[in-house]
Length: 137
Image 1 (spheres, rainbow, N blue to C red):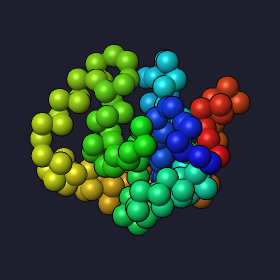
Image 2: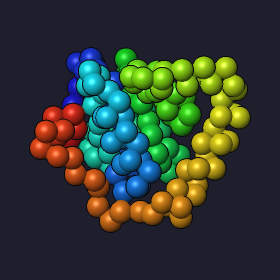
Image 3: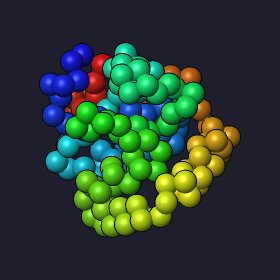
């Protein structure tokens, strides 16, 4: 896929992670304008975005935001996503003033323990027919 022709932000997520699938469903619920599109890290598009940005799945195994040709990972991605949601969620973007190494330490701690705390799926979450247009690949 030619990424230079894409004008919408893409959220890459770990398709077998319960927390990540839940986060995707949360974003869909709080994104009434349908600004975001989604693809799993395991998909061909996910692999392409990671490769073109010199990232690999062991390094980045949760949420990745691809927007305007640039990727954001970990807490930065989560906060940039929150900034575009409805309700009070954009106020979380204020946490960007906290240095990334501190934000990412908390993010990494949750990411390291997410399978133990929330489980792991054997297959990717399948969106409903109505939501399938938001998913790429």
